Amino acid sequence: MDGDDVESEPSEPVSLTEFFTKLFPVYMAKGMSYEEYWLGPVWLAKAYREAWEMKIRQEEWARHRQAAYIFEALLCAAPVLKPFVKDAKPGKFPEQPWPLTQREADEQQAERDRRGYEMALARRKAEIKMRMEQAQEQGADDDGDD
Image 1 (cartoon, rainbow, N blue to C red):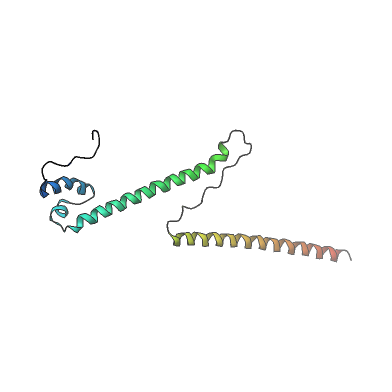
Image 2: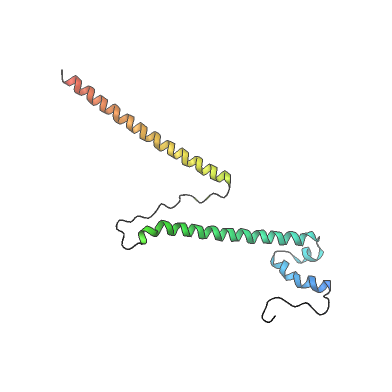
């Protein structure tokens, strides 16, 4: 198969020394030292490889998350970018980053609930104050009519 990246089967067997020597730079790139690779326990190379794969997976999720943030930001700005729409206002961009864990999601929901409660309480207090002032004005008007 011409042009493929797949190497053909070697015509003669490769010694273990050659095999491990060829893999050495790969594991150095993953963070293994000379001593760990050549003198350390065998399972350590597997642990480094799995840790490397986990790191790559985390980086991929981070890039995906960043792309999602950019997409959401564009969606928030999209109404303003329409040339023939008058008085277009951008959407509301999230105040906090997206939660990574269920605990963070629960904490953010509790915070939103607390803020909603405080706003409702403030509105109710303002309404009560306004009604008390109206009642006092009515009481003053009733006393002044005598």
